[in-house]
Length: 336
Image 1 (cartoon, rainbow, N blue to C red):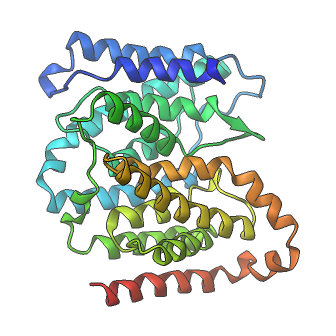
Image 2: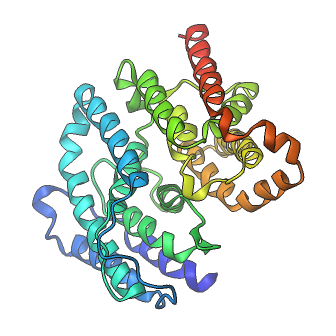
């Protein structure tokens, strides 16, 4: 494990300084950090699995990309700094594809063209944007993409890529650069109807993948602990970030348990970080990779409760979706 984490740690520490502007992309520091990120995939061993097809486009990638773009575009309409930041998001996309190509070449002997790097970049920028722009953003992208091959279990990556990378960079940020904030949670409120937009897009996801139970469980625990479930940043966590199908339980009971963990960890980390006198922003994201680690335990519990599992079967997903929508809309009406 130390051998796996050490390269990430070195990359994080190296990326702790260096502002970026369109005119500074050729700055030696930026080139150094970008190169380290590109070399990072080369440290991984060759994969023993058969190489994937050279070109592969999945709906599981296309859907989040579409939804994330809708949020970013709506947000940019109402938030000028995001429009000024757009060039850097574009640069991150190019960089992400370069890292992904090198990773594919190293692990499988050939690069693969997919949409996979796009949701990583877009979801990252929904949660963290350093101002002024720094190389830390590039570190997040490189770490997120490589984490999918670095941490695997039963043929699947363990962690939500954006969540684990934001968490790692976030805590390095708090320790070494407490004056530098990537927190844009408050800025999400710039869009006057942002909670309702996020809810509508979450319902689209839930109609295709039965993850509504995760959001219901997380929202219920958060409300019991007196946390807002309609604040855009919070809503985004338990509807679109924590519900990645590749890193969440496969059973209905497991999803309920997982969602409860998200809500409980969200509250615990927020309270702990406030008590420690630091921003609680990264705690909102850190709950996701911690819960990802406990996915096998959540699915194992489901196997012990077959009757409850049957009662929560995906065939009842439409009712789960309706319940989740009712919870959020009722909360928004009671706490406008």
